[in-house]
Image (cartoon, rainbow, N blue to C red):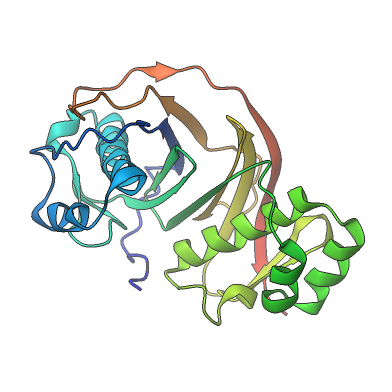
Length: 254
């Protein structure tokens, strides 16, 4: 799993971009897809194909909005889209769930994860298997699946931002009571925020040069859904109400 780039550009603060995807499979293959994207799309059908196309459409909309260029001139790096190829200098992260697609962008490493706020799962079993004893103790005492989802999306976003997979790495970030956070990257400074948007938890982790200012929330932009043909005209923004849940600096693990 590729790690984040070392090219840091603090002139591009972290931002969150969202859109709802199409519900019907149109069978469209847009001509703006990169060769590698064509190949990856070929292995997807139905909702999977729609999620893939909406995420690549959203990346180009986000890059266009940040750079001022038209979206059709923007593209991510080939392969896994963890950074921009044009315009250069931006780090990227993607997530999608049940019809909502999210993209994070920033001049330094970013990771994003989303989950429906009402999602029901066997969260006790997951926590027992993957979480630390400290995390299990306060989560089981609270017995709140919504709190568990906040912790889960935070850990997922952390792994994306630091360029690692789930296996063996979920405890590299420990989430203590009241979201006191400890990570295993002492040579870098990280922050995170979580909000409730469109019925979804949206959690962002990002590298920062300003650890003493955790109250500056990244901007959140909701675009109109992509058109049926995924045309890359600049998208219109939609109004979106969102509720802040937490914003923290991630401390060095001890």
